[in-house]
Image 1 (tube, rainbow, N blue to C red):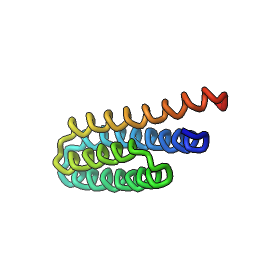
Image 2: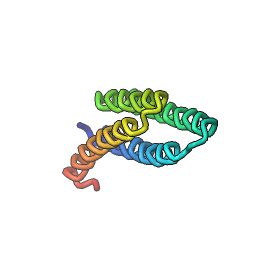
Image 3: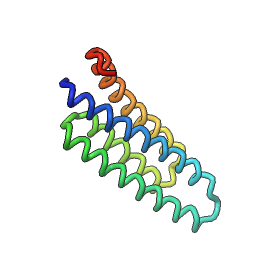
Image 4: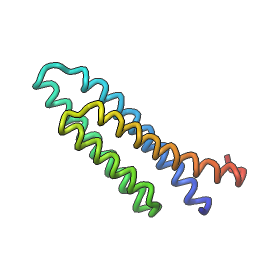
Length: 119
């Protein structure tokens, strides 16, 4: 890993992790909706949000070319599918797994940068 790559990986990983944490918060709000119309609208908005996050993941993947962003992309697509199916508990588990993936990536980059005494 090169320094530039580690810095970009750290930056993108933190951005993805933050976006996923926001997504889990939105998921909690969605699961609390009881009215069918509100639930339907909430699902659409959350999916739109996650589709925006997917675009960010794809940008990171194109910039860095690292395979772990493909894993993260698949996991977010899994969350979207579970939301469409109203499988909210399973979606929360998938969110947690996605956060773990981004955290691992972030930690790897951080360790490299710390080794270089840049952080």
